[in-house]
Amino acid sequence: MYFCSMFVRKKKNRSGTTSIVVADKSQGRFRELKTIGVSSVENEIADFYQQGKLWIATHCGDRDMFAEAEKEREEKQVVEYLLSNMEQQQYECSHRNQRHGYRGENRYGENYRTGAQRR
Image (cartoon, rainbow, N blue to C red; front, side):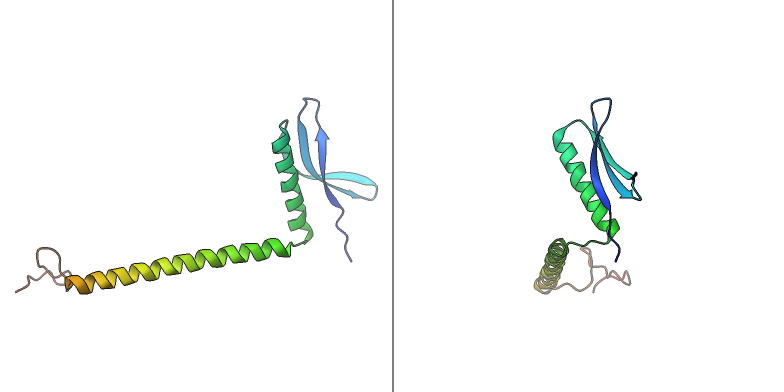
């Protein structure tokens, strides 16, 4: 079994900023794999830390089944909304055509397909 030894590290810089990096410790040595971001603002540092955790999860093969279920639920909701909108538009269009006696003509009485005048 493979054990993922990556972790997120907050590293203070000389300039006073904090770098958020994904590091790996193997064979007694630290290796920085990816720099997520650099900031001096605590809110941004916290966001970068979470992004680093997410990066590790995607690259180690760890999957969050709750996040996946939520994503699937949201996708299903969007698809259902779009389909219901399309059905509603289709109904309104066909209802409008029946109500106004649409025959494939423009407002001048010309047929769209042939260009012939209505008699």
